[in-house]
Length: 385
Image 1 (cartoon, rainbow, N blue to C red):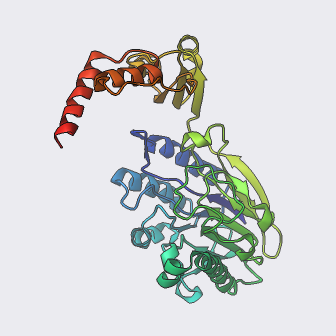
Image 2 (cartoon, rainbow, N blue to C red; image 1 turned 60 degrees about the vertical axis):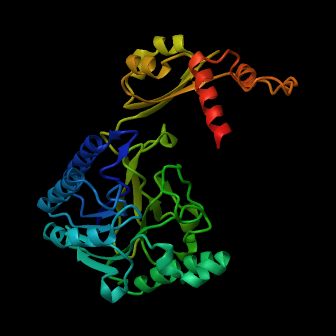
Image 3 (cartoon, one colour; image 1 turned 45 degrees about the horizontal axis):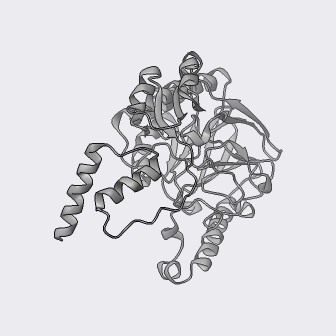
């Protein structure tokens, strides 16, 4: 059985006032082409399909178009909700998506209530999939315990995740390909910083030992850096996000997992780079160096620029964006001033003169006339209160 494991699409993401949906459409289109060309038998999507619980219609359409292509190719898929998804909305959408072979799960369920998904893959082989969507802390840990003993609550959360996976894995079959798919932070995984941090960190995490050892492959979502969870064995992978979602992911090669597995045998796992995502750039230098690097920097999809300055430059943001329209963040890097001891100020010194002295020390220049006028206005207001 040939399986594609993908995750963390974040469809509908608006980042730095820019939509990433056209980029995602290209990535998903290329992924669908790969699935068709390579005769994939099953697709696992391990959560964060959307970037929010109420995605825009355009984001839902992009996702639906991808799964419709899979349906036409007779490739079944399993989708679990991530922490960005609405569980109820995902399951409601899944009722229609079942017509094109998509099985969805919004919240963790018992084995007999749909938590263990059994299906026939495109090649005719049977697959048993222990599906564990994102499990909010409040659903797994009693409120009183959470309020009074956070250490115990964290342990209860990890224990509950272990029991959920173990319960589902009891339904695995010797004549089937046995898989697990989940959306959770597993302790020891390396985050990128762009993940929502509500449960990120080893304190609120499943342990590698909680993942079912009887699963031939464990497909995880939530961490955006593609990686193998070494402590859980060679069969456990975070697919990662298909695009560089923030500047913490600059330089990352985004890839999905291609898994080849037969019943009772260890899997063969290969990483395949996504195609169609833009590259984020992070550049630091002087303004003349920036002007000399325009051609090279224009190749980035989105760019953060840090300009080293001897003193502040008016309208720096506008000047940089005129040079490079792909810039989404402009930071001025000013020399750190030596911490000096302010000269004693006589009690009779006027407040405006004190402000001038402070501004001179901090910025190495006199304040603008408008700044002094504003200070006087605010000081007068404070005096009347």
